[in-house]
Structures are given as C-alpha cells and as structure tokens.
Image (cartoon, rainbow, N blue to C red; front, side, top):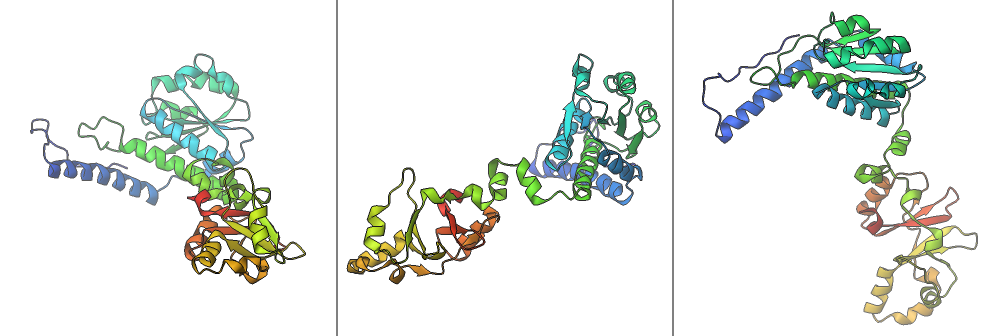
Length: 335
C-alpha cells in the first residue's frame, strides 16, 4: 500500500497565511485517512491469527518499540490494559539493561517498527528467542529482519509519510495505532468484556463518574434523613441531624421499611411561602410526594443523571429490589 500527497517544493516560500496552514493540515489528514481506509479494506489475515495468539496468552502482552513507534506502543499497551488484556510497555534500551526481567515465559511480545530494521529493536531478538516467548511484529516490511524473527507479522505495507520531507513518522504511526486499537477492541469483544468490567479499570475522572454505580455515588442510608410516613412532619424535620453535608430531603417509609414518599426542602419552602406552616403538625404522609422517582441499585450513575434532568428533580432515592431505601443521590454529588 502506497499513499502520497502533493508536497510543497523545497524552494518555495514557507507558508504564512491561515489558508496555507489549513491547506497543509488538510493534506496531512487526507494522507493519513487514505492510508487508513486502504488498510481497513485489506486487513492482513495475520490480524486474526494475532487475536487468537493474544487470547491464548496466559501472561501479559509486552509492547515494545522506540522513537515515535515507542510512544504509539505505550498507547496501545494502555488500550490493551483498559479493555481487559493485561499489558505493559517495555522500552528497548531499558530491556537491554535489566528490564528483560519483566518478561515471563507465558507472555507475548508485540513489537512495533515501521522499517523492521530498527537497530535497538533488533538487539532484543536474541534474548527474546532465548526466553521462548511468542513474538508479533507490526511493520511496513513483511520481509524485514524483524518479520523473519517473529512468529507472526502484521504488515501494513509501504506508505508515504504525511511529512513534506517524507521523513517524520506520521502516516506509518497512525496505521500502527489503528492496528493496535483494532486488536484491543476485537479482543475485548471476543472475551465478552462488559461495561461493568470497563468500569473496574476506570474509577477516576469524568469517565469514572459515568461508570460509577449508584451505590458508589449515593449518600448511604446512615447519612440520610429517614422517617416513617406516620411521623409528624415538624418532629421529623427538627429531630434528625447528621454530620457532614445535609441531604435536602427526608425519605419516607411505611411500617415495612419500603419507600412510599419523599419530603424535600423545596416542599418545606413552599409551605412557608404559603403561610401553611401549621400543616407541619400533620403526618408526613399528608405532605410528602408519594411514589417518588427512584433508581434501583446496580444502575449506573449516568442513568441517575438522566432521570434527574428528565424530571427536573434534585434528589433521587436509591432502593433495593424490595423498594427499601439504600441511600439518596443528590444532584450536587453528580455534577
């Protein structure tokens, strides 16, 4: 596979306008897109063999490469690890100075080199041979020294780099990354990797919050205000206090402990605004919002956010299978 873009002449003046910058950017992206599309239409059959080889691996996938290929390798290793395939990145230079000890006999080594002749990478091969590990190469050259030394080669063919000089690794590294992503995601589907599995590996950041279960995000029952539906409202409001952030609602239950209603701070404010505070001496069942929206344990917090937005509410009780409250989700805890 060979892809070329029209390049700027060495002797022409450097680009200096927004139009010229955008034209160059378009050419770079189109170059990589054309190469990517050509690869997608003719994926080497060895790709499927690589899937099975990695799936059968009892150890970890050790990804290695140097220079730009090394940076791509780190991302591929991270993608493997986050989608259910245990993986680590090994820098070739560090491997030659003791880090070969990171490789076990049950591991598979995934090697990236566009030329297949990278000196630092080729130096790994004698020791990898002694370790008797499976080796998968990703390279442009299926007849390279690297390819001949590996058990399996995914060769994407010769490509013209998007760089004007044809030197900076750009299109070749984009193809390496695409092959790595495709392998990681194909393996995850083959192995039945679920969103719950994904959540275990992504507890932090905005992605982690999306994948939290409601039990992980909620304020537990011990931090909530809970009262029987027959309790007098005034007493229920004034008699319950908790350390930490105050919840903006009282969870109302029946004698069996099942959720029957909710009485919020907004409900209290409305009574006061209407000068109906005398009604606070009535049972909660007369003032509460009956059959409130709730969410069952096991659901994702992202589903709770959708419910809060859809019904314009600020508190969402979390219940078990018998509709007994387990806690409450406050909109301020989720946004």
